[in-house]
Amino acid sequence: MIDDIKIVETSPNRLEISDHTYGGWWLGYQLTGDIGVDYTFNPMSQANQNPYRMEAVIKNNGANSQLNTSLNTLVSDDSGNIFFTSSSPFITSDVNGYDTLATDNNFSPTNYGYHDISFWATSDSFISTDTLVKGTIITDSVYGVDYDWNSDGSNAGGGYFLGRSCGGQVLANAFDIYENTIITSISFHVNDKSVVGAELNVELYETNGQIWLEESDSYTITASDIDSWVTIPLLVPYPLFSGTSYMAAVHGRQHPLDTSLISSTTNPNTSKYLQDNCGNGDWYTVSKALLIRMNFGTISSVEEEAYKLDFNIFPNPTNEQLTIENLHNTSYNIVINNLVGQKVYSDNNITDHANFIDVSKLVSGIYALTISDNKSTFTQKIIVE
Image 1 (cartoon, rainbow, N blue to C red):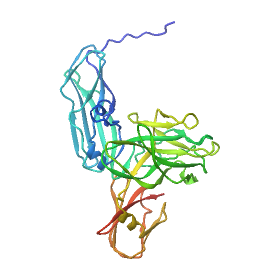
Image 2 (cartoon, helix red, strand yellow):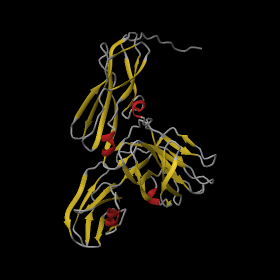
Image 3 (cartoon, one colour):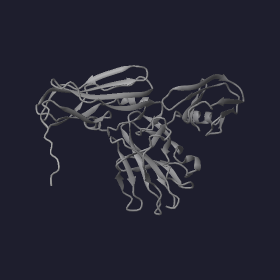
Image 4 (tube, rainbow, N blue to C red):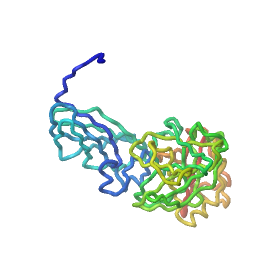
């Protein structure tokens, strides 16, 4: 039976845009040999070596071929800076045809913070498609693929279970490295369906073979961890090399009665995996990316590591006051930055044995505390609750 029929004349000129990406997911990876991931949290050092590569799929849903079809993108940051580029040479878009276009010029950021990336298509006969927008944050040290912009769980989606009686599953996001760096810790969002008392740890793998490289101590989920971000340091800071892909992973190590879940995100232009330790231990791709991030450190020598031991920093996490004890009474400087590299506190030439910093007015989240003198520098993550 047919209830209603409606016949609509096809518009002569109609373009549509979809599947927009800024990591080179469709075409760019073929030229550079990487994955082409859309990094929503992107360290400046990595972005400088891997400028944003904008692409999108254009479809002609009209009755006429479209001449001089082009993809256009505009990037804007919090400071009002604007970068525009388009694709060329212009193409003829055939009726019912799909074309994947990439802009001529890539975007190299110069400022920290949030950036909007707008995508739209045009032709001689079609002024503009709808504008699609994606976002990315240029950070100092955080590498991520999720959309939890304020790191407060507000954009955390469903999740994947880790806990199994067979020894636990492993969940991981893949990250390309474009400049040599050192990973010091891995952050992940504990889904609100997780159970207090569950055990897990973080691990580092080399992608394409999933070769285990490093891990952390075992960690037990507390009540304050539920529906929150947790950062766990690796046992040893591990060097990452440009031209190589790595996986930041979380490994469940608990009985299924004490289970944990890692929240997921909807970023489609990513590589994300599950190791099925209840089966044959093989790695499988999963449909949604994970709220798992890499954190890069600044410690690069034995001397700087020793310098770190000259200070006690507590309590961490804190919600009122952070205390820094100078064990050798040397003069030092302090800078605190948020995840996007913005300075929220600084003080210089401190000689007091104990320095007290009021953090009660800071937004809850993860910050980078840097202590330095004229010889050495180290950075430690602090959590404001």
